[in-house]
Amino acid sequence: MAHGDHIFVHCTGYSHHGIDCGDGNVIHFDFTPKRKFFSCVSGDTSRIRETSIEEFSLGREIQIRDYAQSSSADRVLERARSRLGESGYHLFANNCEHFARWCKTGVADSSQIDAVDEAARPLAKGVFAASVIRVLPIVPLPLRVIVSGATLGVSIGRSTAKYFRRRQSDIQNTRS
Image (tube, rainbow, N blue to C red):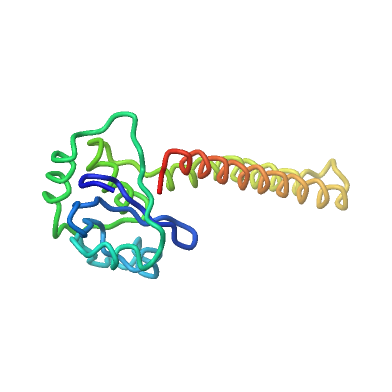
């Protein structure tokens, strides 16, 4: 690892991201997993902080996100330090990955949120189709239940597959 690297650790159900300072510290949204989940409604005042790499990783393997194009390491650290003390964490719009990607590229984006969004589309279509099938009076009731259940099952399968394919593609752009 080197200063200015976008680093992350895998946690249960998500990844936690930050910027390596190169001196044993990391700049990241300092946020516990429980508060991450409830942040959208809680108004929590998490902050972007500089902490030790041990506190950041909590013993998990640290990985590095590679980019085809990114800013210089000095510019990445300049961006990260410019936001120290900032609050405003939001799971879907301003999370730790948004922060780290913005530091590296100047664009706030989150592949985790994109993967969930992409996976939700077939699920939403399946829920809609199953709902329509269940109320169609021309289809016998037992058949409506079976077809709507199967439709929902297929959409859940497609959503799950899309999510894991997207996450796997993100993992391929990393190194330990």
